[in-house]
Length: 254
Image (cartoon, rainbow, N blue to C red; front, side, top):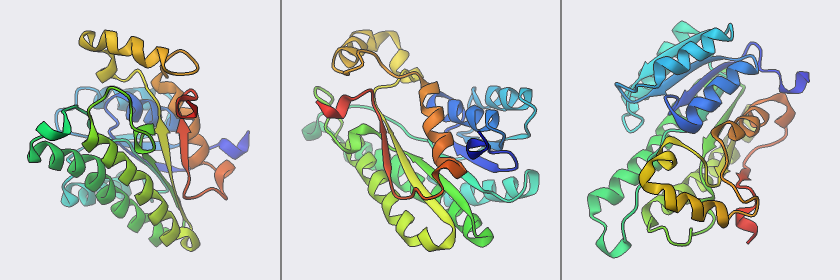
């Protein structure tokens, strides 16, 4: 359907070297967009992302940098403009996760989580928004988490939950600031997903719990975040802004 066609769009995806970010970067290209992928220096998966996009006949860029450094994001925006054209789509998927009991958590661990997951996303969206506002059109999709709406049983991650709750409200705030200026901002909140972090052997037993406590009795594949991202990025969602689209197999219903 042409409503979901992203041909002619120029996309920028953070965290594009692995997991959900990589799947969405490739998915946007499958829908017709040219895509710049952004990830940390030395990301082993970023060249693979670019190769997969180019194999689809789309143009691609690999850009390295740190989302917590505004200068890196500004440089990335300039490279997108020079290498692909005017930015019209962005997906902010860069993020980290770890666990520590709140009463034992070092201040540095708290700060680093918020710096990457929330401040880094703000700096990314800010730079993307500036480019899109100049053009008068665009869509930004932020990857939050169902952990921004609920507290996961058995997971000691007050810092992670807080960062993702912030992403959801930041998304709504930006959406309202830019609603009349042609730029839509939405969030996707995945449930338990088979990212590289959750595929490690040491979390095999925890994965069983994730599956058992999800109504659909399984975890999501990273490719199951592609459809929601394409939808929110496309003309099919032209009147959709400020939403948090929860993609969790029904988890938050229980």
